[in-house]
Image (cartoon, rainbow, N blue to C red):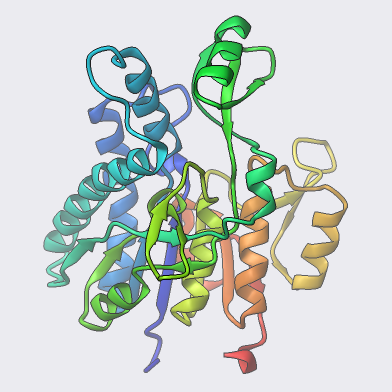
Length: 320
């Protein structure tokens, strides 16, 4: 890169689209997205090349609920199609908000959203032990019926009811990588990889086929960042840092930390699988490829890039 210009993969957390306690109305999501995009647009105005990824959990959940309630009137769609739907839905809101903020900043950078498929291994162990809860809650009786009728794996969700669980396989390949690279080289701000990507398997003849699974969005962002040889993977969430002993009196924020130190904390069970765990794993993976990973609050974007906020995990640039 020339000067301070960097290629930055920004991984938006769910709070950037939907805040706790909100029901997911159009107005709520648009307000949150606009708030997030204002900060991201400033990165572009600063001369950086930006690729934006995002979550889609609540949105896919809502579509699955709609599928369930309207099943007698409208044929339900499989999960890979629901993921594609949300990539378009959220991508539209993101690209429009980004465009509007760039116009206000007098920055002539086009914004494009790409439906993104991500290859997973059909032999991934995750397919033998589904773990990701999705969709509506059911009674135990109805859960048993669905298990028989649909072949779904069902599990009690913390006493709140029974839910379908699906596999969460490893992201192996970004199918649209060449298109993302070309758009980035042509000067576009690219929105892609929504919800971890649409999970597909590749057959021996090269053809692709969608599967019902959920890819972790942060691990997919790390895969994309490594494949693009990006400079920074910026994982934005609702806390200022990664913490050890989180929620306890001895809680401590992690600033600059080595891959080895972070791995030690992870192996001690410091980071929960459903929250900070995947973010830490993603940060470590990208750092291992030679990049800089930063986990920070959405409110601290500029400071995180300056090195004065967030948790920073640097890799060996000689690997790149």
